[in-house]
Length: 595
Image (cartoon, rainbow, N blue to C red; front, side):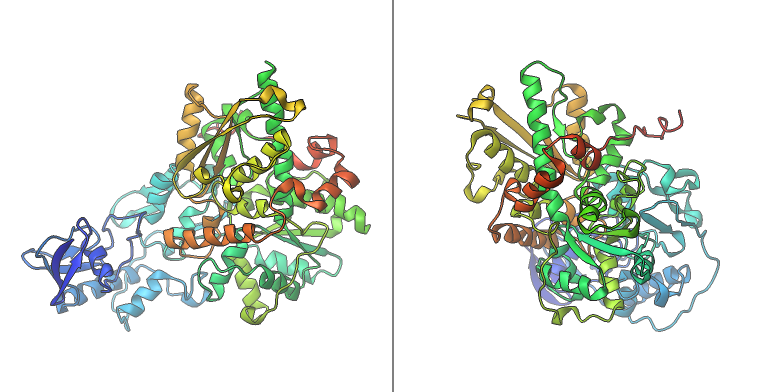
């Protein structure tokens, strides 16, 4: 610990802290804008300036380390005047349409103006170049609202390792975006939406589908079916004032019924189904490899559309490593328009399927031409968690007063293994719970069924599971050690893919989620998403899992019934038709698409 003085108070701070961190540690507020803990620290906005005794100029508190004996003043006349002028100059180049902006009342720039007590607009002048890019099905860019904080640049380049947006040009002509003013849909963007989660203003936001969903609900000729991803139930409450990690599953279902959806299904059902299909596919591959038949290992999960888009661009020659399973919500969409429509005797063309997802990449996923196994789109619209919250508010529903409701069946029951799809490591753990029991006839030998080595937020996690005394039909797997790896965030995926490229990958099975921390940190989740919020959402997801009577996907009775009534068996003809897919070689510059 070190000793310093802030605003005439003697305080302590941890050695290595910046002045900003030291002030926060002692409950002293220093206004900030571009800084983002654990993500972005470049001191570009200068809002966090302070006076440091002995320094000739004001210092950026987010960049300067606190030192023993340092004397800091955060609210002098000079500091306050400097902050206000900096803010007003940024405001002079910013639209004033706050009431119609998607970030109204959740805008960090707006809140900063209130904190600094800005009550006048003194400066007006030339506006920087305005580009509104609607080319992507997932992400909208509005450069007129950009404040050049460069958070999105850092998250795209350093956290995700994709690097499609950067600062272009210099000075007043600076624009954040792809090079040469290219539309974002023409470059190798993964649509992950992490740039949206860190943007402090309305310069980046999801392409909204709310109006389309309302129109479908108003159409008397449409049966409108909605499904919700596992991560939604642990985050939606934040939009209504609940603490991060509050489970609101029952209230969410009640709200969806009140809005007017005809059926409320759970994507978790299809997550259980994914495990049965994907687990069977993994067993087939590892069996073939041990019998010297053609098999591509390691097999890699395919439920994250941001990851799929990334590998199509960055590693197009390695697509055979991907599981052929569609993502769970696309599986469920296909089943709704095939299996379910037959059960209720309705034409698939009259069914409109809506998915509530934590992910902006899902908006791109539903536009893929291969996602139409019934001749109609498997899913018609994707809403983010934030969009659903806006719909609930628009419908005049008092969320906190709602009672709890249950999902509809036959596509609404799920096991705890499906819930943990929401977090990094969850898909792998769910798969191991099923595959190990199929092979040995015994439960996975871990406390509370949790594969602890793959739980948590480390970038790359690994585990080994020894197969001993398998069932007779799997005797060839006896004493085989299955090696698995888990990563979240595309930079981690790159590290594992480079091992595959180099022929040094030791793994049989790899889980990749496109967003750091998994779906609980998706690009469509409530802001902010920081380490504290991630931890609380993760705890909620595991609580949901542990609270269920059924915790292994293959034990889901409605999944069993689905095979009896419709699919016959995993990896069968109908499974391949409705639940599996293939992928598109794109290349880093979309060169494969141009051939």
